[in-house]
Amino acid sequence: QVQLVESGGGLVQAGGSLRLSCAGSGRTFSSAVLGWFRQAPGKEREFVAVMSRSGGYTDYSASVKGRFTISRDNAKNTVYLQMNSLNPEDTAVYSCAVRTSVLVSTSPRDYRYWGPGTQVTVSS
Image: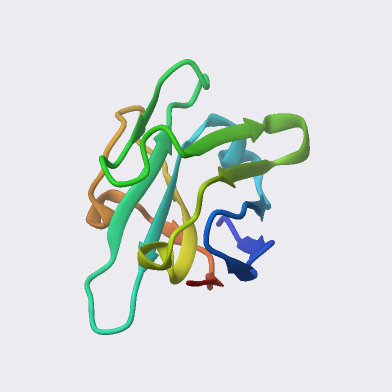
């Protein structure tokens, strides 16, 4: 069983930055694929970023590539999402997720454990 808790969300002006954190429990966390997803009102959950078990591979959605950076600290059982150059289209609830398979995936259906999410609101 893995429990996840996100933090770091809030209200920020366009062009600003936020760093989200996701603290996990359980031994599985350090050996899992970690992902960030977001869901805006009235829209489906969408992929944002993913990091492999080793941390050596990352992938991003086209809408955030070059602006967001995913990282992990296995010693702290924490995954981060650094978000720069935010714009109003980034407004959503951001959730971290754990995939226990060795394979990286961008589909939310492939992730077993989810945090409750943290709200990010970007004002224009």
